[in-house]
Image (cartoon, rainbow, N blue to C red; front, top):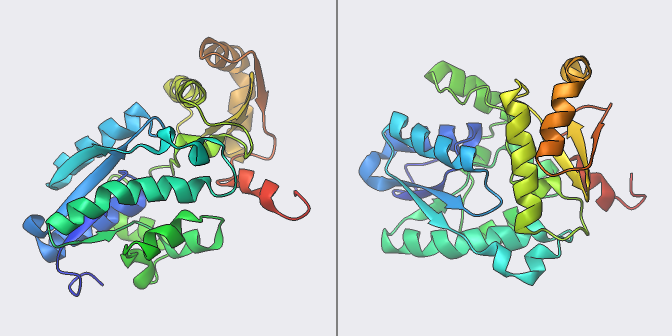
Length: 258
């Protein structure tokens, strides 16, 4: 899946998928033919950016960071069902020139499970020449994690960390202030030991999502949790009793809104 590509530019978030892809590419093609690039914008938490750089160093990857400008586009900020497409377009705007300069192909860490969700950015990436080697290899998310464990990658069990804009319900404008508030609240809760979580933004209300088996922990530490989220800029704090569901805001796109 990689030998026929020859040179690659890897969109590198530092998550389980892109880490496995980058590590495999580095092993198969060699570091001189692999360039991993982290896209930096207000939708990427500062902790995630720092971890991506650190991970690249640990894995011996040729790494760089580039800024994307999706926040300057009204079509992105309006946050309709095509937000992801506008974001991916901005990503490809910076990755394609890098790839062209190196006679390389842009590759993204998309796995088979990702194909079943509402992710219009995938079509944009394909239309602009990107490839999905993990999909070509038929790897699901569980298989990505299993392969990562066998290879000793510390990202094997790293919780998924979608862009901060995914915390904002469709129809609510995406702004730097909104994303910063989400980032502060999530960082505060991680400091309390909740590593796998989402803060869903509803104006002055934060809806906390954690895995079902951590709901009781949030309740037990209610005082500290509420104080941390309010200190991040929210007025009200709620807990989603259905637990953490990746991409659950996409349910609003269903015909019946469910």
